[in-house]
Amino acid sequence: MFGSGNYCEHRFNESVEPMGNTVNVWGKHLSNDAEVAVINPNGELIGGFPGCPDCDTVRGWCSPEEILEIMNWASKL
Image 1: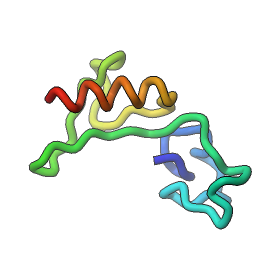
Image 2 (image 1 turned 120 degrees about the vertical axis):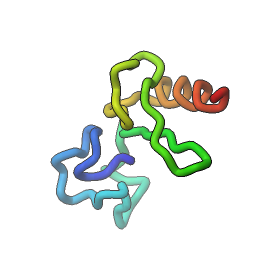
Image 3 (image 1 turned 45 degrees about the vertical axis):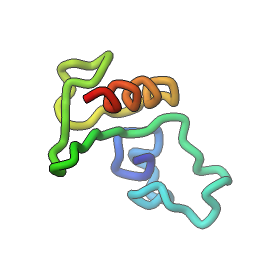
Image 4 (image 1 turned 90 degrees about the vertical axis):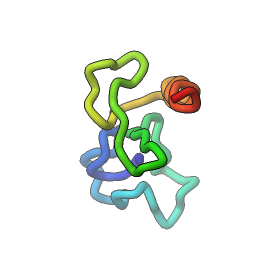
């Protein structure tokens, strides 16, 4: 998630819709970070992210490298 209201650089940018959708997705509203959640096959949110074991069910302001680390971690759950 990288739109307004999400834990990312556009958190307080009301010109970016909540899901990160914009008229010009490839324009000025690109985000350098994102909010991430991991959901298991039962639809439950999983916490305890790598690099942030105390994070509840979402982790904010993640760089692309951190997102890759989370994806690799989640793939082994």
